[in-house]
Length: 426
Ligand code: FES
Ligand SMILES: [Fe+2]
Image (cartoon, rainbow, N blue to C red):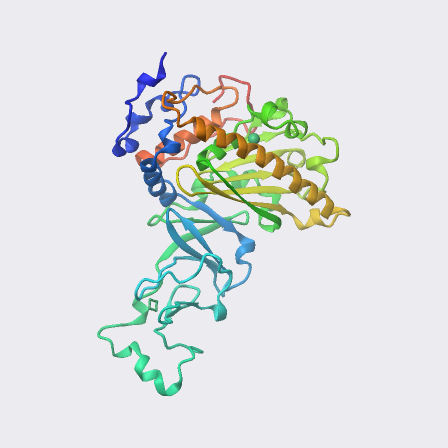
């Protein structure tokens, strides 16, 4: 069949919100086509996707280490909106739009990591907000540096019907799981737990909340963020792209590890030690079950993150789309303190960083080539290999759901660990 004739030559922007546009990707994985190339190349698609996906999902924005203490902050960009994430005096997470209620200044710079005196203070006329977003001074507040005899002049008290209590920062839903911080820009969103599905149970004995960052690094590359995810969730490319990885994560040891939730999951069991200890060099977390102690878990968290969990370290990737064909990827290597107590832990970590950087760079190089190829006019999507690419099919259908306005959580496999070469089990 000549697939290029299945679609119109060009789509109108409103087509990207219609079920009809995606009908060949909606088919079962055995006969489906990958999603239309415009999903990776079109500015219009990107604009709508920002709104429908990133503006309407729990999106990973950072990790708990970034707001360890009250008054720590970071600024995240979600769907084109600047969001302040902080921790209040009670230790709870809070998030707000980064805009002053007075004349609309963007208050914190993107590199801000802490606010002095537990106040978010506007640089323009010095209105100040506490860590719960309450407006506490306009600009008169404790330590506001305004001399006593000038206070009358600055006092907003005389302004008609003005009460500072009516002008808190605009709040944003924020929650965390496993040390990862998520925000949702939608109004009254369903709880984060619904989106995560059964992941909290699957990772129960990992005690993910206790892991801390040992290294971090940013990568920037020229491809749509989704290509990173789709590449991450299939191991079909391993023999050709990752000759080193395949030594510790053998083809025949892969299984699907996927329950209900907005995620895809894959596992390597058992992990092979490789030549030099590889993934198994550091001691595992003490509370792991026997099978977790021997398994590598690979979770793509819709829409933007990859969580690779080994018994003794985690490689976490957070992708931030910056236009249809550019992605900023923040990566962290995390370890549980128990694993760090081992002799030679720092050398093991150096080795892990080197390993993950190599694998990640191999993936970046290949997805940049995919991005380039998707611009070729006759290509309108390709067939999927059902042995390996069910997760790609699943994630593309989750994306389509969001684009057409369907809120639903896909089911998982009937068994915890599904052999991937089995055609009929879905
Ligand atoms: S704009 Fe923030 S205090 Fe004026
Ligand atoms: Fe890869």
